[in-house]
Image (cartoon, rainbow over the protein chains, first blue to last red):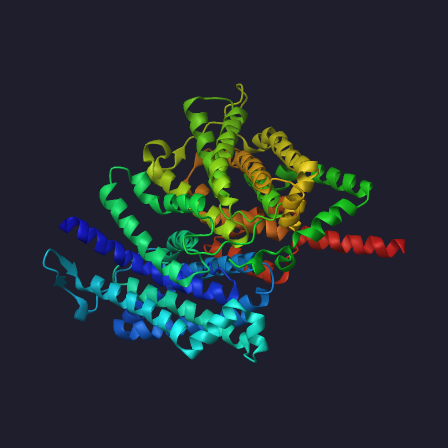
Amino acid sequence: MTGFLQNTFNGLVSGAFYALLALGLAVIFGMLRVVNFAHGAFYMLGAFGAYVLLTEAGVPFWAALVIMPVGLALLGMALERAFVHRLTRLDPLYNFLLTFGLTLILQDLVKLRYGVQSSPYETPSALNGSVDFGLFDFPTYRVFILGFAVAVCVGVWWVLTRTRVGMVVRACTERPELTRAFGIDVGRWVTPVFGFGIGLAGLAGVLAAPMRAVNPLMGADLIIVVFAVVVIGGLGSIFGSVAAGFGIGLVQAWGEAYLSDFPIISQTIVFIVMAVVLLWRPAGLFGREEAPA
Amino acid sequence: MTSTVDTPAEAAHPARSGLVAVARAPGWVRYALLAAGLVVALWLPNGLYPAVAVDILCWALFAVAVDLLLGFTGLMSFGHAAFWGASAYVTGLVAIHVGLPFPLAVLAGALAAAVLAVPIGYLAVKRTGIYFAMVTLAFAQMVYYIANEWRSVTQGENGLQGVPRSFFGLDLTDDYYFYYAILPIVLLGLAGAWRVVHSPFGRVLVGIRDNPARARALGYPVHRYKLTVFVLSGFIAGLGGGLFAVGHRFVSLEVLHWTTSGKAVIVVVLGGIGTLWGGVLGAGLVIRLEDWLSFSGFEAIGLVTGGIFVLVVLLFRRGIWGTASALALRWWASRRR
């Protein structure tokens, strides 16, 4: 029982990263119809940025947790203005290719400067140690990640559904022409929303730095799993993306714990789930049916 | 996904111009191009390192396989490394353990790739557009993880070493002769792709690409057509991957990596989507460029490939062949007026 609870908790923690990344992807996709391949690269930049800030400027974790997401959001907005924006009227595949190219560039820039080896990042001292849950202890830092990620997801949900800004963004997402007819400048919201999604990726990266090895390739493999997550959840649905993120984290953790004799299955369980979902509900668990093709 | 993205009018697929252009070029131009292409293919290992020329042939097949889907069916597979790599592994294993002559080993590899393409294609064609790209990418990653975990067969990170080039006792260890040994297989593969595109089946594919709803209304089983071309494309990519394995006498996990899938797509886009010739040209350029970069000691090849990606997508979406044929046709039309 204790083992099961521990696995479940670990699953929720890795699910928190999937959820944050999937949330950013879904927000960007909703507004721009762009699937951002570079999302993983921005996650990596978030972690790497935190590492560089700490080792070269002595900036602590808490400051990095603010600086990196904001900085990356600005970088993302610049990239949206410079490149992404030119292609949003075309087939979404072009922006997928564009952001793929950006991924290769960002990765190699970091690789050139810092090499491919992983660097450790100290857990901030306030979050050292562990929390006693009665049945088992759990590292404080992981508890913090889970709480923080859930708070961010709830916060984004609250902003989108309960505030005026969120109302405008949802309107722009669902009926851009009609929203424009109501006198709202839809184009003005595109860049900030893109930046916001990138900022979420950066945030996930900073959170990951003390827990996972920081290296230039840490985002690349992760983003492909996140793609599977959003296919499972349905990319059009923000709730679906977040729920699928946590769900996949759980399934993966349980798979690793109870199917450890079958590494091939436990390593690929995400993709197996995706195959099942495609058979059963091709539009994703929470997605709407797309036009027949 | 809402319906707006999937309607063909908004999708504005770039391939149309290319196909029309090729179809409209006068006959003697097409024969002259074919002859020129053959001359270049026969001369290639005299002008380049033969090993590089071998790579170009393999990648030409790979690119044409991706173009069959991207250019002629409107499906962007971002996971074709699964078929290229699976065939490379099967070819390598067959060549090492069974000792078949290399063309038969490659055939076994390509057939295995085609078999693998059946379930992946069956699931992937349930989605279209950007989702198709994500689903194929994810399944290719699954194949990558399986190869990585199944060390008893694939040797994991060490890779398959010493894939033989056995061919009825002939000595093909020199890349120069090996190039000419595989050239007929590659030409057969390319001719097969050409045949598919210019068959009634290929016309239906183009119809599906341009307007899936209309193709369905006309009674064509769209999913089955897409699956069929997906499997054919997997087979051709497998031919390339198998030859690549024999050419390098070594198979590493890199053949299954997502960067390999992405490179195949950019080779096609650079050459020109929906032109077949463009994929061959793009393969030649990209492989040559990478060889030159690694020869000159430049380490960050991804910087250059990524840069090509960004520039081509922003400024040069028709690709080399698409742009050239559009210019040539305009010139041709103005002369006749």
